[in-house]
Image 1 (cartoon, rainbow, N blue to C red):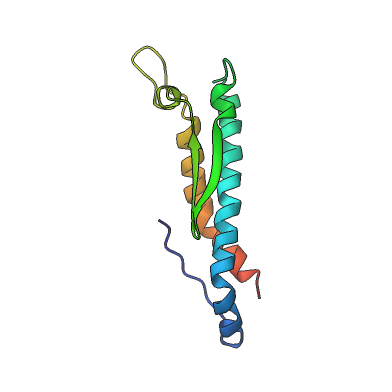
Image 2: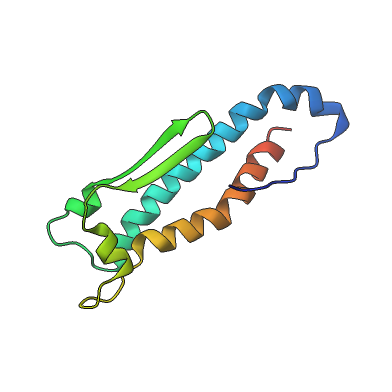
Length: 116
């Protein structure tokens, strides 16, 4: 969960307050789909493609009005991401998660500040 602080000018606060839920939802949606793309890029970067099943199983979706999720649908993806004693980690999902956490606050802030 991200904590944000946004300075709102007094002359637009009423208008912005009405738009805030939509702005936040749009920012979350953008972040979900950017992160989905990042996971797919990382799968290619780490050459974690054999049949393409993991790459094709990556899904980004809104799970609520202000919630989103990116998932990987193959049961063995966790072993690729974190590694095993026989295989080095290829953190395609972890790297995308870290990047999303770093980008999320500024993305929401930009959406809100761009509204006025």
